[in-house]
Length: 354
Ligand code: AMP
Ligand code: MG
Image (cartoon, rainbow, N blue to C red; front, top):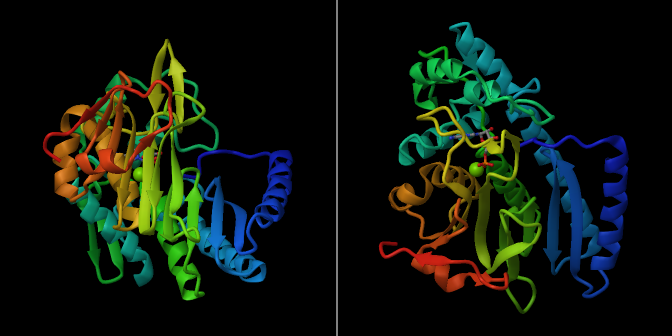
């Protein structure tokens, strides 16, 4: 998360755009509103249906406060609770963590266990070594192989974190926390909880294509586009209603090319290198956005050969994986809800297991 830097000029443009979108979106139907917030290093879109402009606007203000708090707490490289805990781990010391903050740490530990360690927020030192702990993208060359191997050999992992009352410590000083693969989902869950507490029944909170949708869009479901990992357009779309999270992990989000090879931000904890074989993974689920976020990262690392085992372990049944040959792998249930928007449609294989 917190990936892109935006200049003051860009921000003011975005604010203007937000105002335009808000007023134009309110025109087609009186109770439909679109608001934008710049948070978590990205532009967050909130769509409302069935409430007044005043209520939508007030609710957006509350969501902004929720997102700012999460950003300030969980940022991986700007001063935050996480950078404090990491400094303590390096020094062999325990950290005091307020009880409500333990929720995301506990959730992350659960997801690490379920994903067989393919999702592991304890590998922050690897992301830092690769240069991704920065507001600007690295340009290569990739880090020294020996340094990567040495770090992997130390087996950093969030499973080496211990929680005793309000104290958090690790018996492995190589463990460094980075919640970049789950914090966006968690932030969206917290945003939806706040919206619901305010009486909002139909809304989408969307952080650059990663979203949770509740309710519906009037007399039809919400329609959600899934990005083509190698084009600017939409690969496929799905309808969402009730309460669904749709998250995609992709190798196009943060990366650099060096000697014709792509080095991206999703690291395989077993090798210390960017996970190979996958371009994107999309998860659709009624479980939380945090679950969907962590799962998409884990399935990306699992890749085209292993994703079905991890999907089973995570109890997920709607998954789309685009591999490095551009073949689209689908679970049966995903195949029944997805609509391809590309002409001609991509090569598709449907899982015979899931
Ligand atoms: P996502 O875009 O949700 O897949 O998250 C990617 C981000 O999560 C990266 O920018 C890193 O901050 C962090 N990360 C990278 N690899 C992993 C991994 N295997 N497990 C957990 N977090 C990771
Ligand atoms: Mg993720």
